[in-house]
Structure formats: C-alpha cells, structure tokens
Amino acid sequence: MVPLSWYLILAAALFSVGLFGALSRRNAVAILLGIELMLNAVNINLAAFWRYGNVTDMAGQVFAIIVFAVAAAEVAVGLALVISVYRQRNTIIADDIDILKW
Amino acid sequence: MTAEKIIFLVVAFFTLGSGVMVVTTRHLIHAALWLIAALFGVAVIFALLDAGFLAVVQVVVYIGAIAILFIFAVMLTRRELRDQGRQMNRYWWLGAAISVVTFVGLYFLLQGWNGLSKTVSDIPSGFDAVGELGNALISPNAYVLPFEVASVLLVAALVGAVYVAFNRK
Image (cartoon, rainbow over all chains, first blue to last red; front, side, top):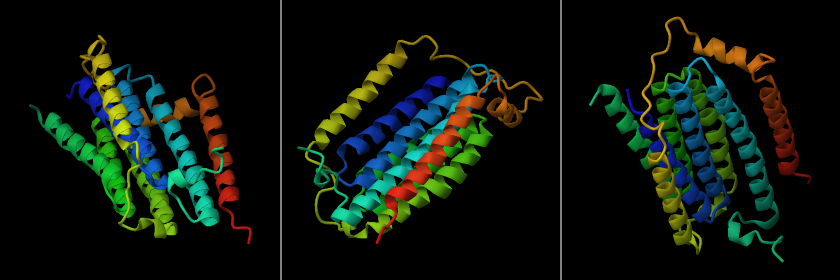
C-alpha cells in the first residue's frame, strides 16, 4: 500500500500548481481553472485522511462531498460573473476589470 | 515496489503534468481539456483510496458538469482566445515564488508531523462504505446539518448565477 505521505505530497504539489495558476493568469476563466485544481488537491487530502484514519468514521468523505457542492456553486457564480462582465465590457482580462479600483 | 505504488506514481505524475499544462498552455480551450485530464487523474486517486463513491461523483459532477461549463464559458468569450499577447500577468514571477514557497513550506511541515508514516489498516470485511456514507449524510447525530447547508448554498448560488448572467435586453 502507498504511504500516506505520497498522497499528501501529491496534494501539496497540485495545490501549489493551482495557486500559481490563480495568481499568475490574466484570463479570468483561467484563474477559475486554477481554483478548481486547488479544490481537487483539498479533496485528495480529505479522502486520504479518511482511508488512513478510522475507516468507520465517514467525516472525510462527507466533507469531500460538501467540497464538491461548494466547487459547483463557486464555478457557476464565477462563470456567470465572467460572462456578465464580458457582455458589458467586452473583456475577460482580469487586469482590465478595474472599475472598483479607485 | 508493489503494483499499487507504480500505479500511484504513474497517475500522480499524469495528474501533476496535466495540472501544469492547465496553468501554462496558451489556448484556453486546451487548458479546459487538460483540466479534464487532471480531474480523471484525481478520480483514479480516489479509486486507489477505496473511495469508490467519490471517484464516481468526481467523474459525473466534475467532468460531466463543471468541466463542460468551463468549455461553454470559454466558447462564449471566444474573442479573448487569440494567441497573441501575454497569458501571464506582470507579477507572474511573484505568483511562482509564492507557489514554490507554499509547496516547500507544506513539505517541511509534513516532515515534522509524526502521523506521516501512518500505515493503512484493512477495511473490515462486510463494511459498506457507500451505505455508511448515506447514513452519515442524513443522520441527525452525524452530518445532516452541513449537508442541508450545502444544499441551500448550491440552490442560492445557482439562482444567483442565473440572475447575474441573465440578459435583460
């Protein structure tokens, strides 16, 4: 069986890759793609701790499912905002969406 | 080196490689397709962890709904897909530095944690993980409240998304 540390290091690496995407991309949709990677890294951690901890305690899987629901909500609202902004200002470059910056 | 370790390493490198392609590729539609590859890798990781229900939900919800939503959003904002121009912002080196620091910090934090070398115990025979999960989600002395709160959050977010994206013209 694979040691727990391998799963945790994979999750940490995937989280860091997603963090880089969320911080560095100019396109608003690409930023949301980075956030999805970060949420998946968290889910790997939750499932790994469920399996390596007490298997009869389902907390890890329950909260992984709640993370799924939150991810779906986040992506629906985020993409709706992106499409709305694109319709009004004809851009989805995050640097150009600055009307709140005064 | 057991077969399981080899499978884990192959899937882990596939997932990480796909993740790196998601954040670096120029074409946004390719980034969305690489995201699907990364999500499949995570589904295989769930299957390796004996979390079969999570693996199925990952494929159905993440790949079947969220990734398709991304592809639609990319197509609806098509004009920004042009290849010219930078894909990274001015401070991308700062973002890279923060990510590397995060990874190194997490790595050393894990090294100092005494539960890291924990070995896995076998699942007791006759243990129905999916049934237990269903019971835990609706049992009042388990997780019915977080489950209902997540449901309300999802409904509110979807109604809000329809309102925000609605075309009033």
